[in-house]
Length: 64
Image 1 (spheres, rainbow, N blue to C red):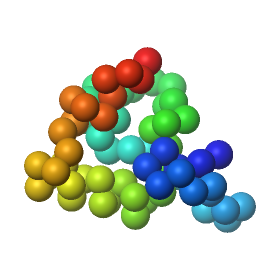
Image 2 (cartoon, rainbow, N blue to C red):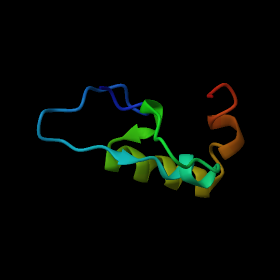
Image 3 (cartoon, rainbow, N blue to C red):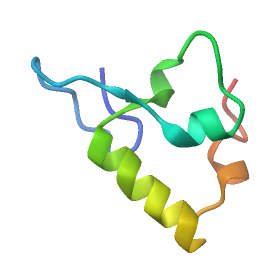
């Protein structure tokens, strides 16, 4: 499985975290693979969202 933010495979001992932006966009129930990311990648994405560099509504337009 790859991180959907950086596209790098998870190592054997790494665990994924649920993407905070997925939860903020109303995600619940089964967590889709694209919402499983590295913790550091999620933190970077949250920082970019807070700075206005990316918008939440643009992250999940084509995801279902």
